[in-house]
Length: 231
Image (tube, rainbow, N blue to C red; front, side, top):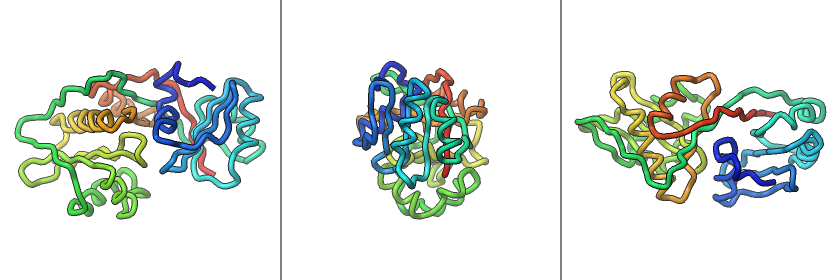
């Protein structure tokens, strides 16, 4: 199935293929991929019949399926007893040149390492407790996390989920509303481009503040939905 015609909607699938993800099933009207690191499943279909065939080719066990249309929904309901639990939109950086980083005066950007582990976990726990652990954050640090510093103080940070989507963006409450979140987003966009990745992020559909932030950083979105299933 051709997915390059809508870079925004299919950003995760395009990056999955670019990064060596596995094609589990593909025809002219259906595509099922699995992330190389995350093991997340990604599906796209152009008809109900194609959606049914995708569900017939799902692994017995998986943790997350991200569908890019609703053609799989009735079959997920009846054949797997699954319902959509989360709707997201993609924000994508589509230019070839990196954005100009708008870092406020008095701050520096540094790559983070394990010395910053506990600070990261402590702050990120408030947003995503299930991922705020040494195992997950350790892998993100290996891939490359970056922080905004004021002197020696870590004020905020950003990373990449499973070598795929930009995320883990946090700014300490004491340092918010200074432009650090936009600057960190721009730093990671540039790093993703350097590594030959498609810079994109997944935003919960009703998180308007995050969508505005992504646009300020130079991202674009068509606000088409992806549908998340958790067995």
